[in-house]
Length: 195
Image (cartoon, helix red, strand yellow):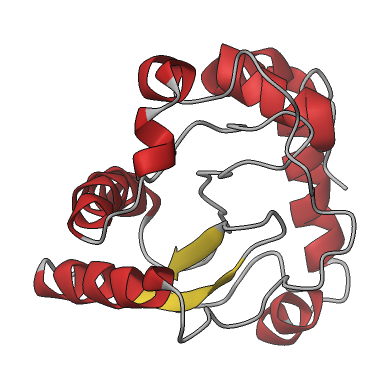
């Protein structure tokens, strides 16, 4: 946290604006998906974050390192999209508050360091029926309907919707931080794909 206080750009903008690039990026990815080290304060911090979230009814299932150095990930259990978005915001607030108690600084900017992946902060989604049939799972859809073309019809409808309303989807996700993150290390943000 002392290093954080030495960087006005991190404090004010949540990302580096000036200075050298990080000495090591994610080129080796030797830490990706590994559990947090027992010798790091990050593990104790993550355990407390998980505990605080459980007390609020937010079940965080995943806890591991991410692709960038000193980057970690939580993933909540599947739920309704509107609830999950609210819980995602609550989790970010809890992360920031608990990190301080552990002498850490949590950066929520999508891409806090140049040429190094950022936090992501996203919600994955799927479509299912009230009976729990996931409509993006071909075998389950075809078995449930008894129709081998049911999945193709569902995908055609989704692709048609993305084609028709792609501009609205793009407007819903557009922000300077998200565009910088996606345009720098991940998929180009101007492209909406159903791949």
